[in-house]
Image 1: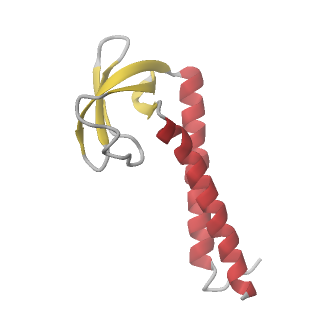
Image 2: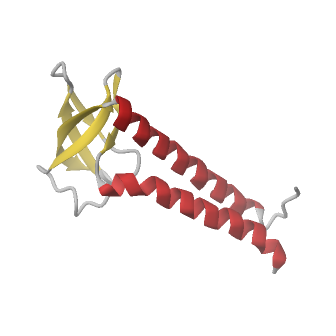
Length: 123
């Protein structure tokens, strides 16, 4: 299939969003099934919450989610549930509705951009 110069950027954005959505969804599912559930505390913000938690061996870990979250939901001092990989505690996901839904939003956005890019030729 040949893409025109008008189609290519939109199709590539769609594919990138699809890839990110699938990647985030797989990470969430894997950590939810194989990870350790714990509670962390929001200790600050840097375009999203910065969370500190303790591993099962009492190691203190400070992390920031892969994608930005709403500051209004994550005020400093708030407790948040998260799953982390015991072999690599920096591999984690927040256990929130926002973080559960985000991969699907990426996938839907990816489909819209991809199909939209294909339809540019039809106008």
